[in-house]
Image (cartoon, rainbow, N blue to C red; front, side, top):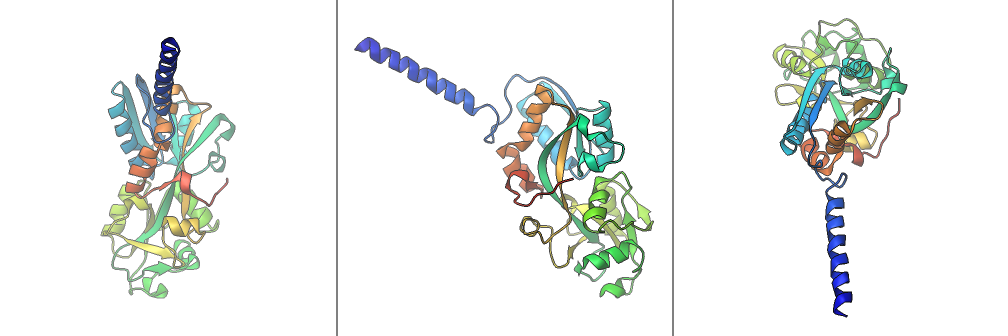
Length: 289
């Protein structure tokens, strides 16, 4: 009897070890596995860049033998570079199928976040909300003064994004309804630079990832809806996209470990929400290319 109980004790101990190991591998919000080493290069969306940089820092803290380099350049750059093999991960605000010149069949899509964007203006324009039609009229050049949309008697200074920008593609598709923007008064790709121009230029208007929105710029509602998780999930707010991390084919084990970390509860329920992105796992509404 004592021998039988001994075998039961041994089996119980082995089971406990197996459960402990299983709990530490992937999913469920756990961090990456031990013993990882190597380098990962990431480029693309500037809207995603702050989040991916922060996630990379935390991942490298857990894995001191891993080095991750994160650069911007825009979604088009990220998709092109990952397709060419120049980087391991291409971050994008748009589906690869939506980018001209990209063979999406070569790439694997990893949706990691939902990100909202906002039409923003200089704080003194005197307007809190615009209809989609008014936004279209401003960016196509039909409306040139804020007084024509209920604001101050002031010239509208339009800051556009370049054609390679994923944010611009999202804006054109879901806010402009496909209408081509006029040339505008300035053109900048970096969210940080756009924020600086809008905050310092009287009458300025543009659009940003909400992670960059603060009291220095005025966030403009669209048809009364705000860039919140609730209004997006209800289908009221149109200006949002997935944040994609594309790899060329299946990722290597190291790259997969980093992507899994970004998708973990630790990141999705932590820095994703802290930095004003939304967890991809909780979004009820869906978009396709």
